[in-house]
Amino acid sequence: MMTVNEIRQKYLEFFKSKGHRVIPSASLVPENDPTTLFTSSGMQPLIPYLLGQEYPLGKRLANSQKSFRAEDIEEVGDNRHTTFFEMLGNWSLGDYWKEEQLPWFFEFVTDVLKIDPQRLYVSVWSGAEGVPKDEDSIAIWQKLFGEKGIKDAKYAEMVTEEAASERGMQPGERIFGYQKKNWWSRSGAPDKMPVGEPGGPDSEMFYDFDPSGAMHKPEFGKYCHPNCDCGRFIEIGNSVFMEYRKKEDGSFEKLPQRNVDFGGGLERMAMVLTGTPDIFGIDVFANISRSLVKSGVISGSVDIRRLRVVLDHARAAIFLANDGVVQSNKGQGYVLRRLVRRAVMFAKLLDLNAPWFGVVLDSLTESYPELKQNKVFIETTLREEIDKFSDLIGSGAEEIQKTFSKGITAIDAFNLHQTYGFPWELTKELAKERGVYIDEDEVQEEFKKHQELSRTASAGVFKGGLADSSEKVVRLHTATHLMNAALRKVLGESVWQKGSNITEERTRFDFTHGEKMTEEQKKEVEKIVNDVIARDYEVKKEIMPLEEARKLNAIGVFGEKYPDTVSVYTVWDPKTQEVFSREFCGGPHVTHTGEIGKFRIIKEEAVAAGIRRIKAGVGDVNN
Ligand code: SER
Image 1 (cartoon, rainbow, N blue to C red):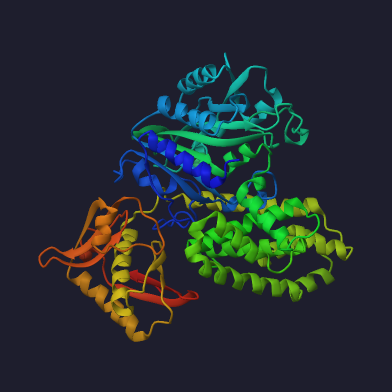
Image 2: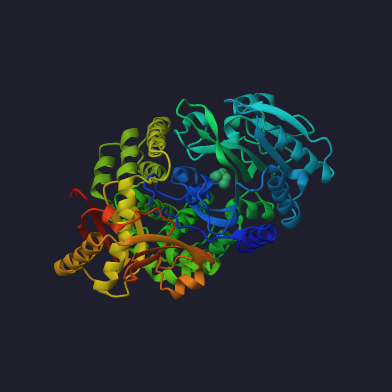
């Protein structure tokens, strides 16, 4: 059986052989992009290039992008959802098109992974919004299936999922036309897209785990079809033909270039190769389960849904911490806290013995060697939250006791969930022990209301359009480079960037340093940065081989992998040739430091052992 690591390697080799350059995964925390909390697809870090900016490595790229989807937290427990996953990507930045991409993906799946084509089904855009039905993809798929002996692969127009579940699939049908399901943009269907957002029709591939159809249950709809949620079909890849951009008047115009954005589910492909419809059966998860049994953390049989939650959340939390996220009450840190708390709760429900987390981390470090270098940081960061929360639930938080002594309503159950991160399942168990009845439908109703709200909120996140490159953000971005260089001058070269996040109001910069900065040190950093601003140094961008950039002492984010051709920003004085700062960076930046305005440190604080955080602003800085 091919492991996740083997599939990833084979995929990257395959696309390399088709002229692609392999690029490393970007961080799970988007840099300089305040419009979204996490990287949740491969295209996100590439948006400027999909819109036409030149990519240093050319027009054909492939990678495996670490992705995290917070909105799927509550879905975890079934056979296919995980919050963290790797998205295999191949991109044509205005280069090849459907005629190349669909056959390549099909070749990879059927010839390299050796998946039986009889089990494959595809979907295409059925047409709407002034964008016609994707006849080209239909013809390409018919030819590809034909070459594998599946003659006359029939097209069926489903349009909506409701219509599809009323109609079902007829013999010989393999290519299905849907509307909303076959349009891709970051914000979803055409009507949800903000002005300027790129998107386009897509074509998805599904694997059929159960040709007999026995897996289908009527609660998922009358009949099964590729986009049905019963679990029989699993989507393994999505080729987006990104050639449109939303216009002011709500219609679409063509982008300056036609792009292909392919995203494939690495873990889902591994799941297909196991032959069993359970994503938690793939090697990386199966290894953890085995270690948990071997080390005695699990004894006897366990509730599989609960175990899946522990495995998923622990893996996601570990990867978030690996990218520098530290638990807090806001933003990324809050999501991490929720993940860890849910994992602790479910571990408790499962009666897992205390060292469960250490066993999970050891096993994952074996499967993903990239975690090795940050293992101590990950362990210290997450352990703190695990211990605190275990104590809280162990001692029976006062609030919970109070709630239970009054009897518990659906709203209480929901509040326990929102405030303490108590999973509903646990509240139910506690309540059951005490013989308290809670109306489950009412609780689900509360959750639904909340989900609607957060969906609207996350749609709002995209209101500003693309990754924010407003003037203020750009000025703060260059100021961040200056601050990084100044910190290394004042505190020493052991300072390394761990992460950064920039909004209109401030830049937030995390870096390695053991102690609190003194007032003098902060003043000194401010002075150095403001001096360089006053001298109006030039900011220049160069594309160069990684080796050359390293020779020039360009600095980057600690532990980050860079491709072999990189973009480097240098802040320098062209007259004296003095270089003040040189960093690996994709930009954008101001052209001269004088554009930045006055720089000021707003706050300096600890975020974790050995990691400090600075918030700083430029111009009229608010506290
Ligand atoms: N952007 C598409 C997706 O996330 C394909 O990469 O599905």
